[in-house]
Length: 426
Image (cartoon, rainbow, N blue to C red; front, side, top):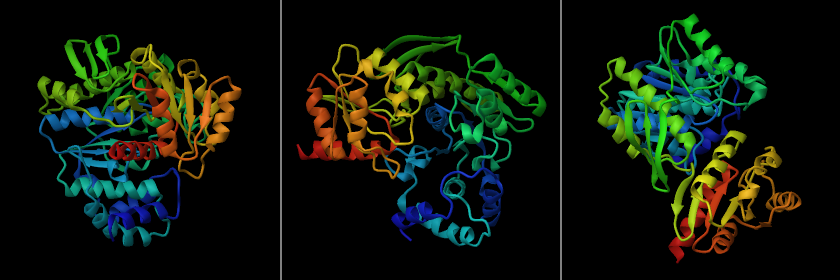
């Protein structure tokens, strides 16, 4: 089995999507010798900011000298991004080898694992074989019944910003969603939460009391932005002054405050993390596809935001970083998204939309999106291919403008490939 065959097998498993429940993951891991029981974790749930929070936490642990695993989803450019050790993606041959080893065990199960469950089990084995001291583990969806929740009490359980997403599975109020996500809080453990409404925080406080979990709330009151530019931002958080973060946007400062509380919790538990490690980890963090500058002349920014809270953050970033520039939005969207609501806040800040069709069965055709945006009063053009879209957007932006890509995660990889091909051809 090679890497392409391994990924094809993972994508072909009987059940697609997410089917809540831990039993299938537990059965498969038992057949594998329970690699997850030989590892330590920082476990991260939430609606938005999970990935950025995970990347910052892993970067700090790596700066402290620990062999650090990072498990995230979805991927932006290639599947291997989902499991990394010390910032390096799983090599193709290792992915193929572990998948080939797991396959007969998964195939022998009466109730086969879902795709996400299978990937989680492969990741646990990879982190175990890599000798990880600690793994930063991002929840796929929810918390209590997510396949990552097979782990025993983590070093820290973290909940990032929560909002109304996957309501059909997780609940139709933020309080119900908070209850589900708090399923990662385990007896006698440690927890850190992103600050929220009193009613949501009350849910977390109650569950922590019931399970004797020590709770830290991120220090949002102590946050102060000192300066910011396209290269990053400098901020204070409580007693920590002049921290540098290359990730852009005010929302990333809130995520960083969560990460600083996670670091404090780990330090209290005896992990050898110094203030220098914290500064270095934040300074060196990389998290692609989140208001990510991938080109200049014109400025070319890729953002994976695709729900209302992400769009809110995107609007703020346009106002903070792209004032007085011509903004050309290169965008595609899935037909089942509420794209009417999604594009509305961005429309006053965009000079023209260039629409492409995402490479996904649930795609909305570019022409249909352009028509919708035109009816809503925006200037919009549809392109036949993603490469045409990239060329058109670059041409419209000119050297002083900005190409801003957002809308669907599924378009981002193809947009980046097309941009690289165009650059290489020049």
